[in-house]
Figure 1 (tube, rainbow, N blue to C red):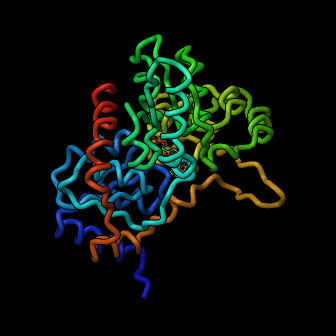
Figure 2: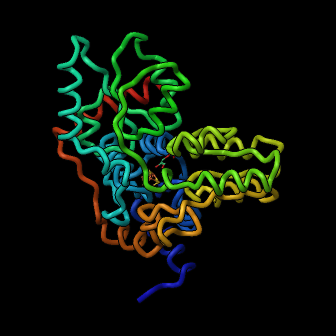
Amino acid sequence: MDLEKKEYINKIKSLAREKNAVIFAHYYTRPEIQEIADFIGDSLALAQQATRVQADILVMCGVHFMGETMKILCPDKKVLIPDMNAGCSLADSCKAEDLQQFINHQSATSNDKPIVVSYVNTTAEVKALTDVVVTSSNARKIVDQLPKDAKIIFGPDHNLGSYINSVTGRNMILWNGACHVHSRFSLEALLQLKAQNPGVEVLAHPECKAPILAQSDVIGSTKALLDHTVKSPAKRFIIATESGILFEMKRACPDKEFIPVPPEVTEGIGCSCNECEYMRMNTLEKVYNCLLRETPEIRVPKETASKAISSISKMLEMSK
Ligand code: 13P
Ligand code: SF4
């Protein structure tokens, strides 16, 4: 039987205390999940924070790759995820065996061994094939530190890779993957919003397509966009990223207005907001049940984890 929201919140809090558990949430989760979280962050901050907390259980309210990253960084802790089906279309767009073939092909076409840079939105198996992982917060900083003449493979997000190529002057070889949420923002709607709201800054996540980024004033990770809204004296912003971030933006700046860019509507199908259905799989009921039963639990095979840890650790080192 469904418990009321308030009752769930109280029960989750007391279970977490009893079991020495810490609850993490990404900015794209439902408002009530962000409300109960001990820590909210972007992909980089969630991974960094996981290594700092003293806890027996980490509950990752986000998507599967975020739980895997935590488990790889904290192998002695139990990492729970409220719904094992909370995947990521971007991570799904790059299978480890396909990436291995791509690397083999690129290695065979020249004498230079490529450096493999993978976005954190990837499986543990892909991270195990990777030299250095990046997130949207640190991709530019890390790519800038790689040798100038290096042959670099970047995957899986083509939009982020193109953006990083444009700001670093590199010519990385790009995997052709994309996030289904970020690649469906409507350019037409954005242009209309800009015309209706002259002078209002556009804030976009680098997973958006190039024409959206070309119309944007600030491009950054969820945390960078949030920080910008707090620091900026402006009162209104147009936002091109998953709409869950609006909750934190409104909480941090209650006197400011945030206008979300809508998605393209394809053949009558489309939602009025840009929501990642995987992130929305995290509900209070599932958080409560996973803490109570201590399942579903994220497990990463030892051999994969021991290879993946070096590319994640390299990222943490290079982003200092
Ligand atoms: P951030 O690292 O910017 O939070 O992005 C994660 C993500 O999944 C974006 O779609
Ligand atoms: Fe993956 Fe896109 Fe959802 Fe982010 S918004 S978790 S990239 S599907």
